Length: 193
Image 1 (cartoon, rainbow, N blue to C red):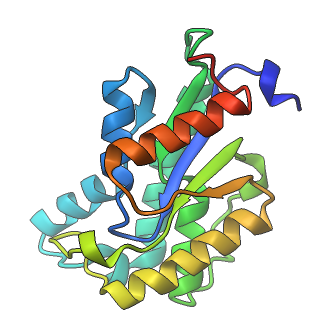
Image 2 (image 1 turned 90 degrees about the horizontal axis):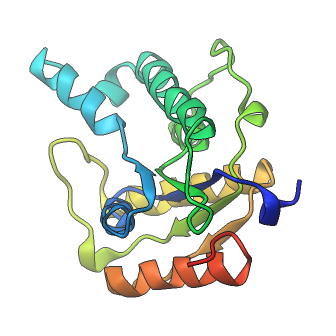
């Protein structure tokens, strides 16, 4: 497929927990790019209200199935959006592949999940490496910095396995990271911005 002629290119901002993805998505959104926000926190907060401290740890398959449903809805919606010719791209704060990377990380079999990742590809993924300086845990992010390093490796591996173009964005200011992403997209004719 010739991405240069395709509208609604799907672009993932990914990486281990606490690497700065959400700040980049927020910045891209302020620049009037269409962005889908991370939905796992929403699911986790709902379960915390019901008394489940860590939904992913307690029920990883159930959590993953709910997350697949939400991210699949985002993916389908993105295909039907009408975007400007200057900015024909859609950014996702994590993709469907991240779900399976996390399950691989905890060594949880997902053979009973009836879902084919190959049916939901992205045009490009920007991966953010672990960054100790900005890393912090919170009510939904329970992983230690050392665990985030391992999760990052599983995420990188699954995007490579499914042959999705993967480019690393080094630690830097939010502005410089966003500029690096936009520069890459412009030089490869994803955007005319």
